[in-house]
Length: 318
Image (cartoon, rainbow, N blue to C red; front, side):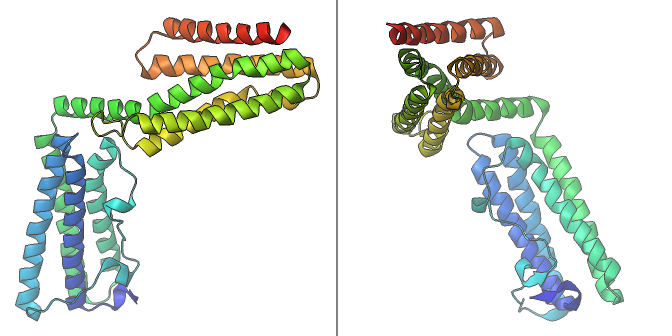
């Protein structure tokens, strides 16, 4: 690996050609990934890729004019201090807001690097070349803004934001909420039945842990096997299964942990308090993400929790 300052003018130009090609391919990858759900944003990145291809062609023409036809292969990761960009498959799926900012950030970062490298170079020809590249990158940034204005009017932006929110709810909120509700509510009866039947917090704790883990595993498999996401757009079944299983387990463990306290009354009081908090959190999530009124969400969750809680107490006390 070499320092950027050690590169010749020929090598710097070859590096710029490779960087333009890499950025163009990143834009194409992003455009392809967005095309199905966000066609307006995909159009922006298709156009940006075309602009990168044109800039690369101009750089190649300049290189051939000065140095001939052979362009040495010099990549970003071959040069110390140069910006490294991960390919799309190495990155988690970005949100629509992230990808709208990506074009601008890529060009701004590269332009900043060129300007910094130019300020540290003592060779006038290298300084001029780096300055020209910095101006070219700044021009790319202005083009990105222009393309965004042309292809993403406010109505399209609002529609794509709604699509992104709907996908987020389908793929993460719904499976997480289903798991949290199942774990918090379904384990109430066995935990509190064991507590009232034995008057021993330790027994209630063991039952609660077993019920929470069992419910988590069961819900994880049920969610993962119920829908592969190909038609409903709910995303990876494995991811949904993991989310559902983890949230189910956490929902049950929450009101189980207080029974680690030896004193029965204190443990019971804390467990009831945790149950109230769990039901409040579930009500808030339903109201915030599922378009349910806060009062209706609270009443539905409280009613279900109260029924299961009562069944547990009734069975444990009989």
